[in-house]
Image (cartoon, rainbow, N blue to C red; front, side, top):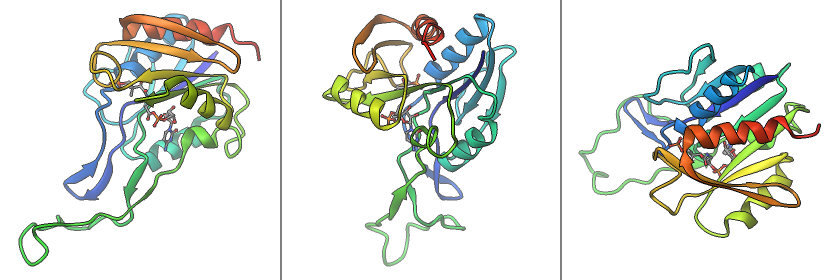
Amino acid sequence: MKFLITAGPTREAIDPVRYLSNRSSGRMGYALAGAAKHDGHEVLLISGPTSLDVPPDVDFIQVESAQQMYDAVQDMIKGVDVSILCAAVADYRPVAVAQQKIKKDGESAARMTLELERTPDILGSMRDVFGFEGKLVGFAAETNSVIGFARAKLLRKKCDFIVANDVSRSDIGFDSRENEVMLVYPEHVVKLEKESKERIAMQIVQHVTILKQ
Ligand code: PMT
């Protein structure tokens, strides 16, 4: 099968040297790409900025912003059988990007206000805008009511299952080497116990491959 996987954070420019972003290291998404490749699938990894090596024989597109990730997914979605959207896409971006570095001296130095707008929703566009009919897996990073919020996302975004992370814990999730997740399906939940992201990724890929279409 042909897999498309998103990974890493996005960066939303404020000016030529500053940006809004988050703590995603990319490890979970890169581990998924490696696991799918290891199982003999064709894999395209679309990633925001990370310091990781791309797994061998995985096709790769580097992006920076949420808009670039959205455009890359839309461009590449044709012929894809499985999409796993693991990237921690920034939810907001500055309405205006300053063309020059914003100075911190002068009258308005003590405080500044940034006006933000929503970034495009890649997962939410997969079915209705991109017309994707393959297997669709989203992630959810939650700090409370993890399963409830994940199930609401599953239905809203028309996914086959959601991989839910409890990001209130510092030993799993963002920027750690291990993860512990719940696979939230419409009718049931499967818990994957705490393990390396590589082993969690192998189990997620197995769950995807046995999904009925
Ligand atoms: O990169 P690591 O350090 O290994 O950490 C892994 C992780 C914690 C980042 C990963 O496991 C994870 O949970 N990724 C999703 C993080 C996130 O942004 O969650 P969310 O609940 O805000 O988003 C829900 C889903 O919508 C995700 O599939 C996300 O890719 C997608 N999304 C979000 C916003 C947006 N504008 N477009 C999207 O497609």
